[in-house]
Length: 492
Image 1 (cartoon, one colour):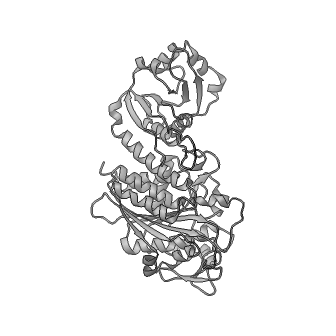
Image 2 (tube, rainbow, N blue to C red):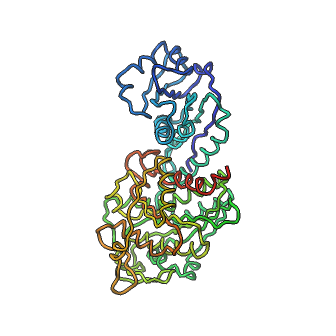
Image 3 (tube, one colour):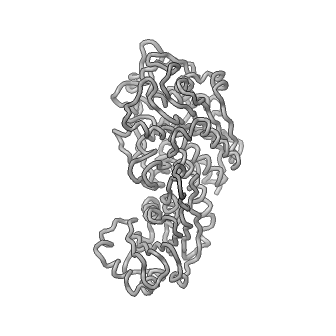
């Protein structure tokens, strides 16, 4: 698995600057008001920093972007990276600066001269998150991993606990990215369940429900998706009990480890990307790892449905009717609309067993959400304004794009079936919304609920906000922050 860079905070030591190796990141807000570290670097480089700051290239930089001063004279460092960032910047702007630092980090150690910068935790977090490279499947020499990140600040006593929090959140994000990046012949349903079971080492209670258990529970829509595969379908239940006696909050993840579309076979072009169709379960796994590592003072239960959607003689056919755990019958119009079939049974089971205070499901559910929102935002659907607003606030703070989409009875009508209680698709119009309405049918009255369609953000072909191309880990930070805000803010 990919290990995040170690991060630490220390007092600014300008006398040590000349001998620092690797990379030095220098934050510059006002070029006319350089701090002690910047003045020392300018003196060591005989004015090279001043010349860079006076250049048109620096003046045209966006906030959070950077320029490199390579092999600076008078210094042992390979690079002084000059990052344009006002001292009072925080949140997404500070994260962007950290991402710029992490993008160039490589295997060399990095020292961030942060001084009295306000958003120092966001800067460090961005640097650690961006310095990611998935190498599990490469042969030959493996990269040594990202170099350590040291953040020099004016008042290190104000940074107590930051390094541990950053480490916990980065570990969760990297766990998600590794899972989503893994090929389907490596991350089978069995291997996925095994890796989730290892969370028990961190104090998470993990239970794996096998096909016989799922049959007894009546999870026939979930089982219908995986019945054409040799990989056994499973549901993994993870419980983090860090709160008091209150009911848990629930996270539900779609874990289709590979999606051919089933009998409704997908086109060959691009099918290799369907290794990421377990992205929702990957995010849920990452959140649970973060909660456990930071000893979250909240009760959270996470459930993921792990299946593989393959075509063979046993596979579900278009036109089949399957009975859900809830008792509703579902007419299968398209076997490629399988994620909702997995989620509806797991959501119902979560509510039946745990009576959660609220529920969020995550799924790479529809291509339609990509048409609507591209790769910048996940689609957010909810029956509860307070819960939805809490998530959107957290997503904004973390720089993770999210946009609320509508629900409504008119959309639900598109799912009306002639022969069963409901169809699993409602046609091309508003495809992401009708998919959400299908899931809405399996939310009990009184349960606050969010559905996150992450098809456009879970894995990208270009660099995303915090990550290189590939798996992004989108959602781990936002859900962790939402849980802290909702359940832990009065305990800090």
